Amino acid sequence: MRYISTRGGIAPISFKDAVMMGLASDGGLLLPQTYPTVTRQQLESWRQLTYPELAYEVISRYVDDISADDLKNIISRSYATFSHADVTPLIKQDGVYILELFHGVTLAFKDVALQFLGNLFEHILAERNQTLNIIGATSGDTGSAAIHGVRGKKGITIFILHPHGKTSAVQALQMTSVTDANVHNIAVRGTFDDCQDMVKELFGDLEFKEKYSLGAVNSINWARVLAQVVYYFYAWLRVTDGGEQTVSFSVPTGNFGDIFAGYVARRMGLPIDKLLLATNENNILTRFITAADYSLGTVVSTVSPSMDIQIASNFERYLFHLFGENPERVKGAFAELKEQGRISCSAEEMVTVQNDFCSASVNQEATLEEIRDFYAETGYLLDPHTAVGVRGARQLLPEDTARVCLATAHPAKFSETVERALGFPAPVPDSVRELYGKATRCDVMDADIEKVRAFFVSHVG
Image 1 (cartoon, rainbow, N blue to C red):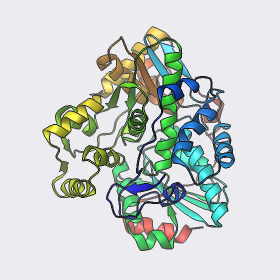
Image 2 (tube, one colour):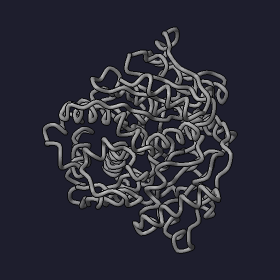
Image 3 (cartoon, one colour):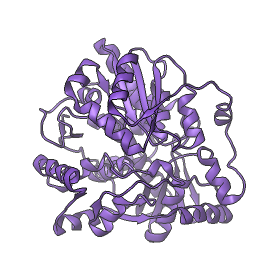
């Protein structure tokens, strides 16, 4: 299996090189040259597998430069940290299935990928006798999951940028209360897009990237997307084992990585009926899917802050396929975005888009209403991001399909919003309660690339 860039500027590389490269050296994103296919017979043979066993079956199809024993060990260690035996359990509530992705160390779906990526990094660095300086941007959950995935790991230093004052209190504490010597938190006076732009600019400086051995943990890293593909297979197998015939997924998303993983699963042969992309008021992706309008707006702060994004990094991966895997067309699209603030598609391409996805935009009032209604009907607490996905599913997905809603975070991470909706806060797990009163460390700075660069250089491992 070899990996190529969406912008066509690199020779095909191995899986391990793709993991270490993160963002392609030509500024594009890495993808496999081909997608392995899974037959219905193979799917049936996976029904009784544990989550780690299933993860090996899916992931190993993309990895030919790590031994089977080593890969199984990496996967096993990654999911041994989860608090639920099923890793991503599936709960049926009032006509929808909730795929709980929040049983990892930071109570968010990012743990599923970042525990795996942290162990991958450690394995490859030890094998190559190298060091790595990770720099990433987060709207809340990626940062804490990445930090907990690599804290204390030999040969790795991590720098995480997050928008100052625009994450939940728990998200901020999960990052800033980790004071290991190899962890650095930077709170940027700006938006997530400002953070992400600066990270991309540092990766785009190839001399700087090589000199300081930069590594990526954002979903620009292919290994992140690959790990997320697994739980689509897991959910489909569990739902259809119960007798359901067709399965659709509702995915709350801001950066397009989580739903792109579903797109990959479908390309591999998983018979997904519909992929619903659910957004909040920051609905550039919904506007694109429903009205061919991919034009930049202003980021709005909402009760679902992890989705407060305008420029979705992983969207480039999808555009590469939409544009017939033509790197020149991809580069042209992003030149248009930079110059005119939009990306244009043909009518024929939009037919493909609307066959691949449906989409709903759920505002804050409807999000709070969904938390209230769902709790009244079922006694089940939704976090605001999951509520966006559930509301979208109940609006758009037909009742004769099994509607699987991805629960991306534990409600305790957004307890203020739960209290606003219900009048009482979400129950707090011990792991969250222990954060309060801990010592914290964080550097606050302007959205200035040169200040961030100088801080990085002065603190590299």
